Amino acid sequence: MDEMIEFLHKGPLAPLKKWGTKFSIWPTHLVTACCGVELAHAFASGYDGERLGVLNFGMARQTNCIVVEGAITRKMARALKITYEQMPDPKFVIVMGACGIKGGIFWNGYNMVKPFEVVPVKYFAPGCPPTPESLLRCFRSLQKEIDTGEAKNSIVYPEVKKVEEGKKRAKRVPPSPKYVANNPSVIVDMPREEKWAEGKEVVAKLSEILGELCEKIKITGKNRVAIRIKKDNFVEAAKKMLEAGFDHVKSVNVVDVPHENKFIVEYVTSSYLNPEYRSILVTLISEIERSDPVFPSLIEVWPSADYLERELHELFGVWFEGNPWMGRKFLLAPDTPETPLRKDFKLQEEVYAGGE
Ligand code: SF4
Image 1 (cartoon, rainbow, N blue to C red):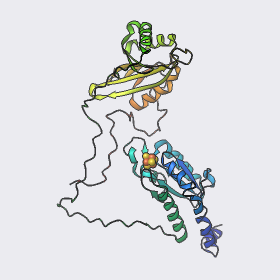
Image 2 (tube, rainbow, N blue to C red; image 1 turned 135 degrees about the horizontal axis):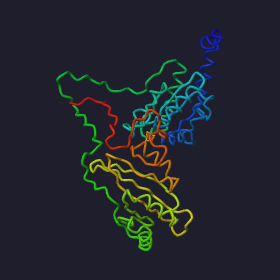
Image 3 (spheres, rainbow, N blue to C red; image 1 turned 90 degrees about the horizontal axis):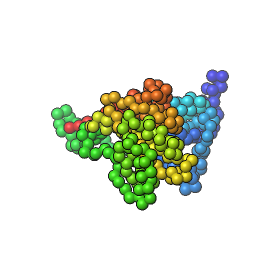
Image 4 (cartoon, rainbow, N blue to C red; image 1 turned 120 degrees about the horizontal axis):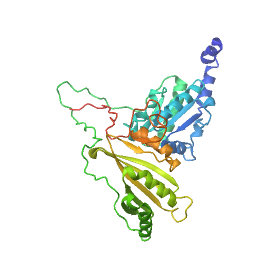
């Protein structure tokens, strides 16, 4: 077997094999983000990537090239690795976009993974988004490499002179941006009052339904109402809303306000069954102490809140009392750090240029 492989690689048929591989690049595209549009562009009629002998393919086991299109997250990294391992040799990886090189606009996100740390990358198409030309250039370079056995950079970079010790840099490198403002001047409160003619009637009805449980109620836009409720009254208020026809939760949100030592918890509710409320979104808002982030779970009232509460528990560390999934990691990848969406989460910092 080894002799046969040797013969294929070095024997008289080797040029034929190279020629065949060169014009049979079948990339499986890992569309993780917007770079995928540029790949589509490269293979649409304008650029017609197929004329180069490159044909996009959907099956990992019959492909010999992966094009990673943009950002790779911790969860996606697993899929990338599995896909790569299923591919037959010879196999190549091309990475598109700033996201795939250094994380791009998500560069310090808790969930970002650099593809070259997961699989061996042959070529990068830089840019955000990279142009179709730059992707096709990667394929041309790869074909050249298959042909000649050596990878050549087509760009000549200017020579970088080493700065002598003790001497100042000619150019000042901007300091890295500050991501966490200790005391932002933004006042985090209920959204401002908006006009909505028929809304007054809805507000009157909701005030009547909730009675003393309602601390504050506001119209926040057309078909939008926000109600502030104390944490201790929240479950009772939710039950009253359910009786009135608000039969499901559309979303649950947590807002971290570290400078006021609080989390704002929001449940956005609406109705499928009551036509009167079908077009209306009512947000129930409450606050909890950041140092003791416990909030009553509403899954008994609205089962659709379940996954959302689990997600927020993992992202912010809010403990939804009564939800049996608290304390477990369920949605985030196992090696994701704890509570990554809290504002005091230490963001990844990379020193990529020296200061003065
Ligand atoms: S590099 Fe730009 S275009 Fe590509 S995935 Fe990232 S954000 Fe989207």
